[in-house]
Amino acid sequence: MSLLYQHSNALRRFHLAVGHGHQLDIEEYGDPAGIPIIVLHGGPGQGHSTAVLGYFNPKKYRVILFSQRGCGNSTPSDICHINTVALLNDITAIKIHLGLSKVILAGESFGAMLALLYAQQYQDQIAGMVLWSSFLGTEEDLHWLYGRHGAPAQMYPEQYHKFAQNLETLTSILNCYHQALFGEDELRKRTMATRWCEWDNLIAMDGDIEKIRLCKGDKQLIKAQQMVHFFSRNCFMQPQQILSHGESIRHLPIWFIHGRHDLMCRYAPVYQLAQKVNAQLFIVDGVAHCGATSAYAEAIRRAADLLLCKIQHH
Image (cartoon, rainbow, N blue to C red; front, top):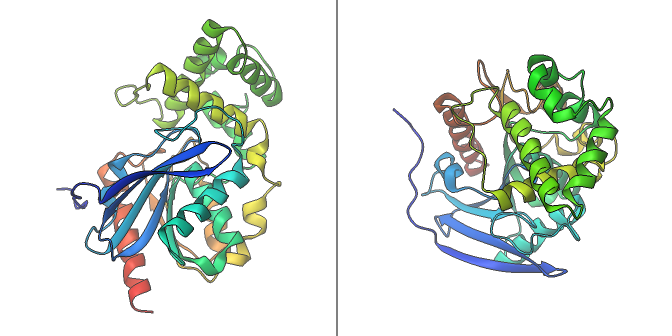
C-alpha cells in the first residue's frame, strides 16, 4: 500500500517572464499558507511533472512546480540564454514574484545539482533540502555516463557502440552530437536526438525496457539539445564546484535519497558530499536512477516529512 500523498487540483497556474523572452510555466499545489517548497526537475530539458506531488504533504506544504527555461511548457524552446547561472536566477525570480523570503528546495538529478548550487550561493534563503538521484555535474560524472570506460558502456556495450558511433573520446562524442542536434539537417537532427535519448533512458532505467518510454519527437529533441548544450560546457561550473563548497551548507537540514545501483548518477560522490555537509542519507538498495519504485518514492516522502518536522520544531 502506497503512503504517498494525494493532491487536489492546482491552486493556480501561470507564466512568469524572466528576461530575454523566456517565460516559465509555474504551478502551485497544497496549502497556500504552508511552508513553501520549490521543486527542481531533472534533465536538463525534462520539464516538470506532477508525479512528484505525492512526496509532499498537501496540508503542510505549498508546493511550487515549474519547468526550467526552454522545456516543458516554458517558452521559447531555443537554447539562447539558457545556462546554469540563468536557471539559478530564475529561482530567485520565482521567489520574488511569490513574495517568498525563505524556501525549501527539492530536486531530482540535475535539479538536485541546481538546488545545491543555489543553496551554496544563498544559504540564508534556504530552510532545507530534499534531494534524490543527485547529479553533481563533474567531469567524472560525464565520463561515467558517456565515456567508453564508464559503467554503462561496460554493462551495455552493444547499445554503447550505437550511441558512440566508434568515437573514442567524450569530447568527440559530445561534439558530434552538438553538431548534429544544432545543425541544419532536420533528419539527422531527429535521428541523433532519438539515439541520445535511447541511451539516456537505458541508463536511467538500468535496462528495464518495459519502463522505458521515449517522449514525443519535439520534446525528445529539446531534451537532447539541452543535455548536450550543458554537458559540452561542463554544466557551466568549475571543476568539483559543489563538493569544494560543501562546508557552506553544512548548517542546513538536508536529506539525500539515492539508489545504490544508480547508473545515471554515481552514488559514491553523493555519499562523500553527504558526509561533508552532515546530511541525512537514505540508501535504497537494488534500485536504479529514478523514483518509480514504491520503496524509493516512499523514502523521498519520508524525508520530506522529517524535514517538515525539523523545521516546525525550530
